[in-house]
Amino acid sequence: MAMNVEIKDNKLYIEIDLETPTPSASGKTLVVASTRGNAVTTAKVNDKPVIIGLNAYIKP
Image (tube, helix red, strand yellow):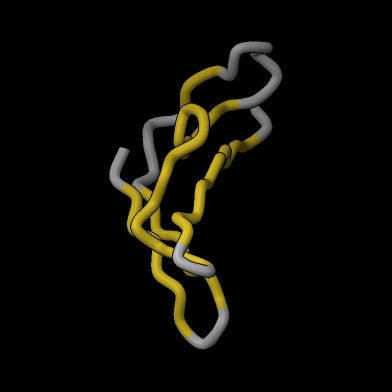
């Protein structure tokens, strides 16, 4: 999983690679992008790193 994070004009931009759809743990959805938990980024707010937990999915 490759993720790029940038803060520009007071907005957070997240770019993450799409994956081949795979079943979620529950089997109700197909995950197409995920950080697989929380990921510390290089983006900072008040000199502290922004942490992102992201799941993108589709319904079968």
